[in-house]
Length: 487
Image (tube, one colour):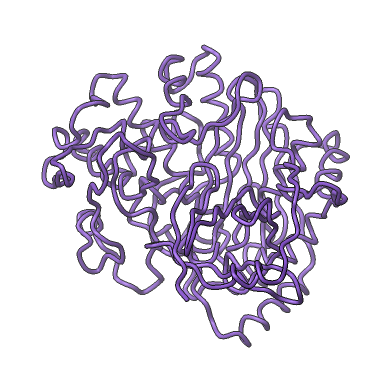
C-alpha cells in the first residue's frame, strides 16, 4: 500500500515510466524444479490468478501470471508449493533485476516480516527449555537496556510482545538505504540518531488490544540476546534455521557480497530498482531474514509436523499455543484463520521492494510460499495463492463474493479526499471518469466499491474502509487502524 507499509521511495515520473517500459520489454523467464508431472498443474496455476474479492453478478475473470507481473511491474517471483507434507514443486519467474539472471528456486529474497515467526519459534524453544518465562516482565530478561513502563506503570511480557498485544509503538521499519548510517539495536529501541523511527515504548495497556508492532519484536531481539549472550543471527541459526534444514537462510544485514550475487534486488511500484540495492534492516527479529521460498516451506513443514505430534522444533503443545489466536486472529508470531481442516497459519512480509507471503494449513500438509522483488508483489502473491487454492482444492483462499450498491455523484464527491493514518502514511479517494476510485499506493488507482455509504471495499485485497464522519477505520485481517481526512 502507498506509504501505509512504508515501502515507497519515488523517483521522478519520467524516470519511472522509462523503467516501466524497459521492464515490460523483458521476456518472462521461468525456472522450475518439481518434475514433468507437475507441469500441467503449474500451467493451470499460471493462467488462473484471481482477485481476492468478486462483485456479485459480475464475471470472475482469471488472469495470467505473466500479465499480472507486467501490470504490477514485479520483475521476479519465486514459488514453493507444499503438498501432502512435502515440497511438491518450486518455480521461479522473471529476473532478479533488469539484465540480470533469471529467478530460480535458489534466489535469495528479503523475508521482511516473515522474520517474526522465526523469532517466535526461537523464543518458544527457549521457553520450553526453561530459559525464558513467557509471562514474566520482559525487563527481568533485559539487562543493559530496559523497556520503560507504560502510561499506567504497566510492564510487558514476551507472550504479549510475540502476539502484538504489548501495546508497544512502531508498527514497521522503513530500513536504511545503501550508504546511509545504520543504527545499533539500542539506538533503534530509543529512536536515537541515526535511527529513522520513533522510540519503542508502551503506549497502550498491555493485553488489552492487538496492535501490530515491529518495535515489540525489536524488544524481543534485545531480550533474546541478553538471555542467551549470543548474537541474534547466531542464536537463530542454532535454534531455528539449521535444525529446520533452512540451509539458504540467514539473519544477515547487510547481506555479504558473495551472497548478494544470488539475491533478487528490490524494485519500486513502477519496476524501478532502488539505488544501491537492498535496504539494511538492523531490526533482525522483525525484518532481517534473507531466505528462499523452499526454506520457508521447510519451516512451515516443521511446524505442521509438530502440530501432528511428530518430531519438530516445538513440542505439540507449544506448537498449538503458537497457532492459537490471542487477539484479532493472531497467535504467537503468526496470523491464524479458519477452523478444522481450514485452520491455517500465515505471515506476510513487506520490506522496501520485497513483498512475500507464507501460508500453510495447521491440520493438513498443504500450503505455499511466494516471494517477490517488487513493491506491488503482495497483490501478485495473493493472486497466485488463490490460483493454487483452486488447482489443489484447498478449503480456503478462494475469492469472496460481495454485493455492491451504487452511490450517486453527491455521495461519491463527499467521500473524495486524502486520508492519513498516523505514522503509516496516506491514501486518496477520488471520482475519476464518473467512478469512485482509490489509490492505496502512489498512483495505483483502482475502483472503490460500496457495500453501503459507510462501508467501502476494493477487489485487489480483502480490505474495508469503514467510514465515519471525517475519517474511519481501515480493516484488513488483524490490521485495524483509524484514519482521518487530511483535506
